[in-house]
Length: 387
Image (cartoon, rainbow, N blue to C red; front, side):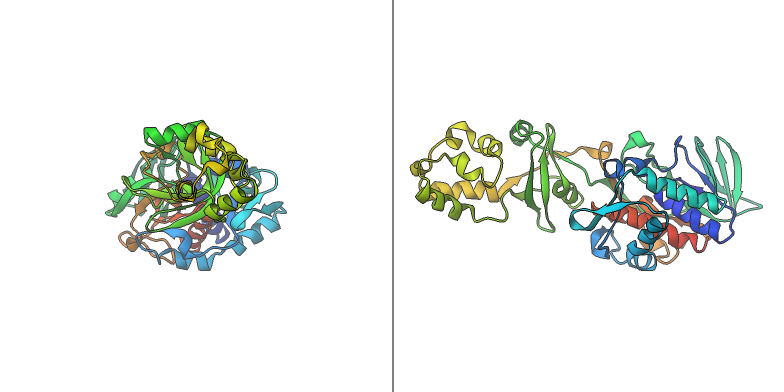
């Protein structure tokens, strides 16, 4: 029995069914794979060309290596190709469906059907216990079920409107597992009032930037919003950010801004500051950061020292986020079931025979870019070989 018709749960079901196991999948949602359908803007960033353990966060950074090497991105791509699903590569190796995320979900459901997997939806789990006549007894709204192997694949706490719940963690704790504290990952930042004024004024503008803290650096775009900052670089950094910590943002990372301004002062002394910098960054950003008066000031009136201050503000913008938007908009949940209490080869509990944990409920969190789906495919496949 698999609790959760998630990416990981469906992959596990397919593999177990192929081995001739009788497989039942229970999920409290009214549709299987809801997160698959909404991912990647409806196009599903289903994996990445370049996958390694360094793309994942865990208190045991080596744990994911076995699963990722046993079922790779190329294995999943082969399945996608077998189903003749058209896809394309975007920046940084991200693979997306050409048409719709439905293609990936339909592929998984077709493989489940081929493997005689029984999927039952709108089913609320009431309790899980060890049985007298079978290892596990699951009481649910659709009845009582007995199984020899139980796989927990019900995800984390991110996006509660998609029926996220703490069920997986509760089951783990019930059977004596430790849970690393959970938090929202891949989530936009909210800002302090003074920074929020700038951000809201620039809402909708995206800028290629380098975002960093003392531990990590990401070079992708950031997106200004009414509430704060979003965009790939910000979402990535959120998984490495700690409350109260500053982050640095270089809004013009590829250019020597000071040299650019001095050069333009020599050749176009009557040009406005926002015109000179407008070649590198949207003019609205210059106006919002420096004010209209400074933005429209002509270059000849600036000293090199002022140019240096301007360059520093653009390339070394320091902000201290007020917080994040939380699980409501988070794409993943950090933390989860302690990997040290699971087999890295099979995902089986070291405390209870026949109990498995896969996907997001485990303390393995991927970067933005298809990595969390690859963890789902890999961990689900590994468990499916042995359940």
